[in-house]
Length: 490
Image (cartoon, rainbow, N blue to C red; front, side, top):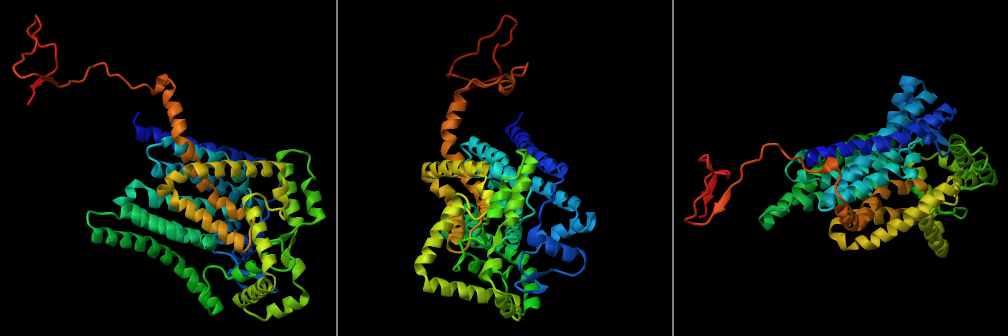
């Protein structure tokens, strides 16, 4: 069996390994009658499915919105049209599709490890295995949120710009541009990941024999990925211009989100925990379905910062403004708060960093013991892996840059558990790379199983034997040489 065939079978097994526990979890929740909550995506999808358009009520006024990116609500609207608006069947179908997306992520993480560390195949297998079986990522498919798709698209984009075949096939660059555009349409914050990916594609595959030739190749390949990405974004940005009569990059809510994380009542997130939320988290019988249902109820029982910090007078003032202007007004209030309270802002930033890397104490779900154990374990292993993999910085710099940029953004603005999940697989790769040499050495020292032994053909293959000058081959009694065909040296 060839190496390529073994890898293909292994990737299929990895995809099945990632898919199975997610399907079981979705099935358990559906059987228990658990109805997932669709948040703002569900409201927009309902309006799309009923013909009202991309509409939601936002800060006291209802109308065409750019509060969310277009792809996820549109996909959910399709399921609403097929299975009924707001129906459990439509939501479970979305969860099942998200199980497939998570399987693709696991495969892409393995491929990324192989592309970056071809000398250590175990690095790809180990990183893909963690992506397939990490409990937090398994649980993520039950949420009707865009995080699973963002995680997948980021992994797909990085695989396409890193693949060895991308040097000779321009289709990889086009695919990377498409993935980058879809990624930004799902989560514009992940636009921070596009420049490193574009640069990686240009530098990794653009080198040539001459400096000018290399520079032109780098520019061309970077322009290819960036141009395709821009072409994917253009229709939605044009729609925003038509709706709001001003330039809006994908979503209009940055100022609003910035205010949520930075105001006198904020704890650095968009939520304020309540006693009821903590009580709901413990209201279960210990089964998986009831435990997860209790976590959802506790999450919904927590107050949004809007409900506490905004008065009726605020809503009246904001309702007369257009959607981007409402967000800008709240952003102005946040900047004023920071100007007046710089020390409070520093405290919020440090608190957000802790919430981002560990657990968000304003989210009742993050108080679950299993989640805490998984997060602490991840942080310890990823930190050790980071220190051990620094010697590979020339290869891993895109992962380091993307992880640092996203972490810094959410430290300075607003944070939540879901914002870290898309970049966690990058830590799987650098941790696997750190331990891969030692693991591969151990595996090489183990006896090979029978099925892995090289196959011996019944008929020996001819081999060329070199004889010294003037030497004659031995002749058997039958007059035939006992050796395969010979040739003389020189």
